[in-house]
Length: 336
Ligand SMILES: [Zn+2]
Image (tube, rainbow, N blue to C red; front, side):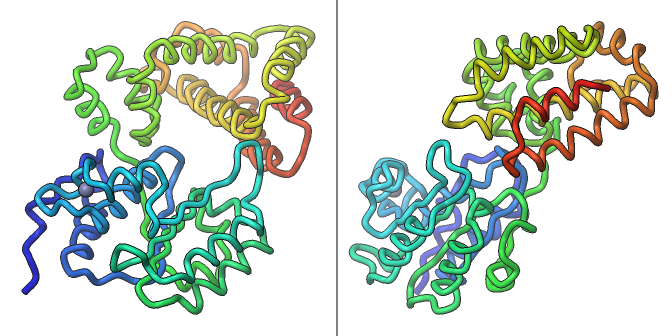
């Protein structure tokens, strides 16, 4: 008879309770499909959820699932579990390489060593290029018995349609500001920082939790945001000088693409605030703490100019991954 283990599962996750229920039910029934595709914005909780799911399947302490202290749980965290294969884009690389996929396939094809299942997780699956995605498709089309693959991606449209159609898609939607706010408070955060972070997170609990744990980092981020806004009020020369300093500091970093994409995401939120303030100064801003500068800068530009600014950032985000020089991209968006 099947044990009722549902009462022993209490996953520490913020929001997404419908997904938690669904996955817990699968574990209870021990009834899994071969491929799951977790999609949703960055830092929204996809990876956290996948970790809990995988650990709960393997965890050998059935009293509190996952327990985080049994061998299985520990080895999953350390990526040394023999039946768990984890692949991610390597530092500084834009794609998951074909070699990585071949190694993954090879290891997935072996029978489980210690558990009933073999689970493979591919993080940033939207960075599989065509060649590696096609190679992966073979494993997905002909799954070996008792194997499961979890793909994590930000955008479903970047996943090969043939992979998509063979996967169960689990969509992660934004978590409400209120839920994030309440969670931060319950972790002991003060009212002000909870408010700031829940707004800034834009529905992604991971962002709020990251800065809650690194409040010095949050203060630096606030200074950066303030500079990004203030520079819009400066002369073209000063703007280019500022871009130059950013490129000097970050242009050669291994993770420069991630850095510049982040910067553009932050500019997108600033643009949103500038537009909102122009429409109605009473509407609550994402960056309430920058209200003074937002009011000043938003007065400097017309509504159309701000909308264009917003649109240009959106196109810039695509260009970052098409090998366009980040300096040109940044200079272009600042010529409003
Ligand atoms: Zn465990």
